[in-house]
Length: 577
Image 1: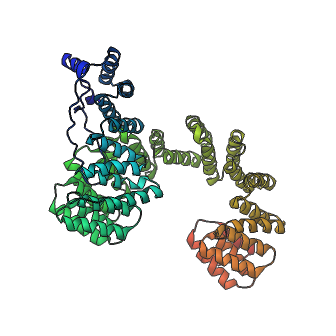
Image 2: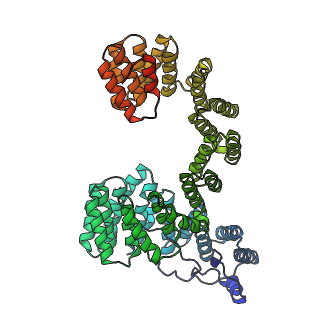
Image 3: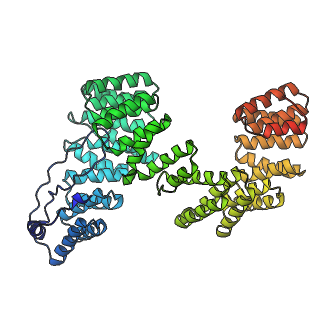
């Protein structure tokens, strides 16, 4: 990263003293995410040179020296302070570029908006502002900058904003579509305009409209490869995978050196043909050796193919890349786990840092430790994570208990949940989880207490109402009370299969066999599940429909052969399939 800050020579110091107002800084060009094209940046107009006060000069000199020493926090802080203080275009531009270089979204956006305010005609400022606004889903504001440049004859930024439509809310996306509709494209901007329109329509699932829009772009310029690539991607989403892949293959054959086209083709292939996708990624990596994104894509394909010998060298290289290190450790752990080397898997999982792979790694760490009955080690790890992620502690208590429960360590689960409730006494999530654990431990009085607390805190919690009602129907003779609770849950969620199953079960307990069969059949149709099949089969068996009961049980066991609820029912009834 140090290339952004070059050593300060005497000449550099002199220029900093008298001419920091110039915007023509070329250390790190703006890295603008663009959908299908790069937006050309107009050369900035020179700003008249002027001297800075000594205090400003000193602060900026410290910033440059700090940058050379890789103290980017000081460099950025000083430049931002002076940008706000002086409003000098050159200082603001430098602050913006440093923030972008460091990939710091909030400072980048703040400085870019200031830059546009000071130099509204500056295309680079507009491009960065639009990109950063798009990143945070402020599509309407981003579009205003793109539209400004489009009216100036530079329409490509429209695609950048359109490509980010997925980050906005439904309302933002609809507004963006309306804004695009009101923008009148010039002859020069028409292709990019219709591509932008297609991109937004694609992301709001208006695929037929998107296909019509991109067809207009292709009709205007049948040599525009990216327009045709977008057309292929939309065809793929519409269900014409064969046609889309054939179109992409043709484009790649027509322009074999176009790396972006080949990458788009490889990504489409990855959903249907891992072997061909791997071939494309191999070619991309050959032409771009060491590219971490390509290495990761190829490694994940090899992982999915269970070609661990090919995946491991790529992942080991990625461990040297800071931005990919955690993901590499996560998949190295998955490979070790698949090979039965749980100690090696743990060593990799524990090296996964905060990010998208952290929680999956944590879950797998718990699974390995609890399956090995290393409950103390599991609890120690979870305590450390809770201390680190205090804002997610409640969720982490529930997660730990869930894994304990999965392996039938119910006492340990109850202890963890009780600890969690000491810290979060009104947590309905933890109360509900502890109720289920206590039900497994036959502590029905404690389970009922916790469920009633949940209902007191959340009177319309259909899940808790149903859980308490089902427990009373299944484990006690308080059928009328159970019926009232389950009926209340059903009124709140009339289409919920689990609640309908409970309603059928309590009718069975009350002796209302016809209503029980009606409800249980409805539940099983809504959600084929072994437990619902066990209930329906039991009512059929008791009412003399033994052949149908056996058929229902057989189909239920086929859903999940490891589930024991149907075998337990058969043993209790003395029945056989």
